[in-house]
Image 1 (tube, one colour):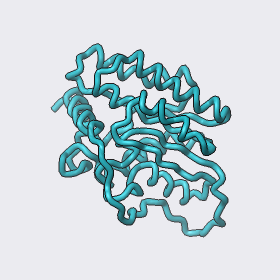
Image 2 (spheres, helix red, strand yellow):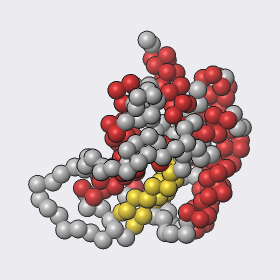
Image 3 (tube, one colour):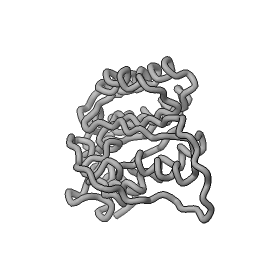
Length: 228
């Protein structure tokens, strides 16, 4: 299978993933935090990182929300003794329009870093890229108005090639464009190295396992750590 076919297969798997809308039951999270030979004094967690997204952020299909990538990033932060608390505000099935309606309530509590992971469900519904772009920008504007010093991160998304080449290309271009115009840190593709890989997905072959979620956390952490 050539590189192009692998990418298309990965995007198709991602397409199936975002259409789901359910939550998992609770169990103890697996500890993936780095360990240190020297115990460090604990710092006060006086800053908040808000992860605002859909089923990928919510941790669809996992035994516990603690296994979703925002919570795995919390473990990385704790291992480094950084003063941040991660808040998982993911909602399965969320669109950018739904996120825009929901964001005011979420912003009642302070936000120091805002990680925006929305847009994939817009692509599933064939919503115009202009509308998706407008909604993403409006969400960012609301966050900045409430917390002007908040740092921003945007997770890039894709749609399946069955949506047509033009829509595929136009949709993919939304995220680097918004990130550049809004001065946001960009995660190019959240499901990089996970989408389409059987061993990293659940029994339906589309939802990331806890091992897949570890890679999602790495994909985000690679870009997030530099701004903390």
